[in-house]
Length: 496
Ligand code: N01
Image (tube, rainbow, N blue to C red; front, side, top):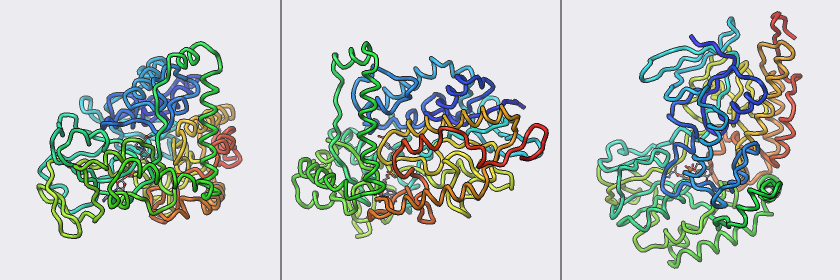
């Protein structure tokens, strides 16, 4: 049994950020657990061709670990992963990280006032870690979602999910099907198009894809970023403010985004000459209802003669091909499944068990996904969830939200330590009022009224994944730990 003050599950952007902030604030007694073999979470796992960030890297990086050397405005996966590893090394996170460790479950033990975390490692076998505080940094986009299509398990060709790319398979000259047209697919398709023999793109909902202002930074810009104090922060602030303007349109005034419809349609016209194909890929919902995608190469790839866009739904998969609902069979050598992730139903939620014996999944199955300030959950004392409910974004940098949460985390730890508090649980009423106000703000948003179905909504039809509005409002809400919203227990075991 290992005893630590704080166990962090996950070594991606949020788990690493938590670890660095803990170190900087004198909380040295922590352990990071990760099932992978390296830092980076989703940026370690998503190695598909074309994987890149659709938020400029000067913003999509830690404010406390700026990188003047980003090679281009929108960095590719390898460069982001390299940055993450450099940050981990600089902060010596390896000393407190165990890789290859699967967390079986984490159960709150009321008598012990601790989280009991059951883990297993392929070489050392099962073990337990006991922690006063559990930081769940498991990430919302880590569990691949496979489509529930009859026969898919019996397909005899190559098949893999975008987040589990099989680099041993050479798709050159092959007949390839890509299922899905979301953020991952629109990056994959242009990379495959020049080399495959034929590609069928199975599109259920046409997304809005706007031009991507991607370019390499010049030598002068690099010199300025490295040598002139403030230039990089200024550039970061400019990018941040531009993204915040979009947030206003998304949440309060979707009509402000109307010009984006014209830009999206022009992007289609530039890339595709065939009117029937253009028509197929023209979205039928309002810009922003689903994530706004950015690409200059997606439509030209779809426009190629050897690429078909299939809009008849998939009926079933045979060992050698895909049959659509109109009865047509298309034979393929390989299927790329770019169908997203289990976000509101992540298997990770089944393994975190609170004070009443319910897992997060069971608790949220009754009420819908909810948390106080996206971080603390009634019934789950001393659990701090990174990138929890209502902290996601459809338009700007998640790292900004993560850093806001880190402020709240550090103030939570300092406040409880200062007051000898050993158990902290958000009050049900405060959690309820908070989530009600979020839902009220969301009611005018494009995600609610934009005419699309998206993974932003849970099974109750509520948008439980997204932060509604300006991200600086979330920064303000998480500046200080508001202890009045919590039931706390002191070392002396007297309840406040
Ligand atoms: O997944 P998605 P993703 N039959 O859920 C379709 C982040 N990200 O991996 O729209 C046929 O967006 C589904 O169709 P529909 C980003 O936050 C960031 O692409 O539901 N099709 C959709 O087209 C993003 O939002 C970057 O009708 C099926 C697609 O599969 C998140 O990851 C890059 C289907 C899934 O799209 C997820 O993106 C990449 C079925 N049964 C990803 N089931 C950055 O650049 C689903 N689909 C930062």
